[in-house]
Each structure stands twice: as C-alpha cells, then as structure tokens.
Length: 328
Image (cartoon, rainbow, N blue to C red; front, side):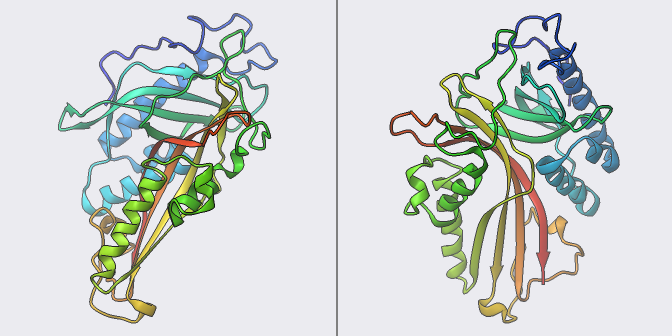
C-alpha cells in the first residue's frame, strides 16, 4: 500500500534538484526526475495489481529475480488464495548512475514494511533496483533486498550522479562477476571452503550454510536425504562505486533444494513445505520419491578495493521468495 504522502527528496546522494543539463546527452541521459517518476509509477501500479489480484499487471511491472518472486506470489494467490504481499514505503533515496546508453537503471533505498490487514509491520531499509532496456520500454523492478547492515557511502560525480562499475573491474578484491559464485561456495560447503578467505561471515553466507546443514541433519534423522545448492542465475547484475574505491554489487541467485528418499526409491510421502504447496503444478503431486523446493533471491554485496587490508566481501542484504515447487 502506498504511504499517505511519499517524499521524493533525494537524500545524501544527489543535489536537491537535477542538474539543468541532465538528459541533454552525454553521461547523464537518465535524470533524477525521470527516476523518481518511474519509482512512483511502479508503486502505484504494483499496489493496485496486488490489491486486485491482477497477475498480468503485477508481472508486467517486474523482471529477472523479482519476476520469479512475484510470479510465485500470484501463483499462490490463484491456487491457495494467499494474498499477494503489499507494502508501505517511507521516504526514498535515489542513486542514479551516470550512463550514456541503454539499458538504463537506478537504485532506490527506502524504509519498507509489509501491510497486513491495514496495519504496517516493522520498517526495513530496502534496496530496489529498476531497469529500462531500451527507449520507449517500460521500467521494471528487477530486484529488491532488505539490508541487514548499513549501506556504505556511494561515490558520485560532481553533479551528484552515482558511478557505474563494470562486472570485470580488476581493482576490487573479487571481480563483480564472480562474487555470487564465491558466496555460493561458502553457502554450499561452509566456512571450511577456501572461498571463506574472501567472503565474510553473516546470515547470507555462513549463516545460510548453518541453517541448511541443520535442516539436512533433521531430515536425515527421519531417514531422508536433503541437498541444497546456491546457484547462479542468468540475470543481469549491477554495480556502483563506493566512496572507499570498492563496489556495491547487486545480483540474483537460485537456492535449489531437494528432499528425497535414498536413491529416489519410493517410500512414505515426504511433506511439502507449506510455502511451496501452492506452487505445485497440481495439488495431486505427492512426494513418494522427492520434493523440490526452490527459491529466487536478490543479493547485495560490498566488494572492497583490492588495496584494502584483510578485507572480505560482505553480503549485506537479501530478498526473495519461493519460486518453484515439485513433488513426485
């Protein structure tokens, strides 16, 4: 649900008004005003779609990791009557990179809370990533992630625009295009994996490994095998320069899980996690052999500069939800 009055002041990352020459060509083809318009239009359209249960409209406003999450929400609405999540938003801050060509994109940080029966929950500082692929194309929300650490200071040029970073930048501890795979090595194998030397501990790395390992142990006690794999996805990723010379990296990943009888030999039905039951292709699916429950996530990581002493990549935020379920 839209907040009663959403302030659109750009906080700490841009001048009070967009530069007069912005949008006239060069590296400032996307203005702050255009980013603000795209953001407010998205909030209105997504809120209306969620309230009406309009799947076509809801999915037209999202792409990439966010599409998978929202598709799961509308599938649960259709199959189980589970309402699509609605949100209330506080005052946003805009980070608009200085780009001269398409695709165009920008990032917003905003306090966001879920709306349940007209009552907002606790607000969480959330990153929202928007992209427009070509002139005339619609803006879409490509990913959203709740921050569990403070966002680092973002570098900007003299006009207040953020500074884009390439996915192969060699001046960082890790090239941005391998951040996700390196995080996955820790999630899949734990802190003994060599990747832990460059990936910081936290809820989305060693914490996620510990949670998955504990679940696997509990399933083993029931005579079941549980496996998990944090896997890269073919979603575009985005980077902004941080004030210390590092980079903020935003990327999507899949968490694929399987609970099965040994060697997939049929046995007693394996329970389907409640949040995945609405995603089954048919309610008649029963896990005599295995149950697959997969998630789609958007992650936010801070990649330090190569010159930083004893630094590690820190995954500071994540967002996502169930996106696929199957039992057989």
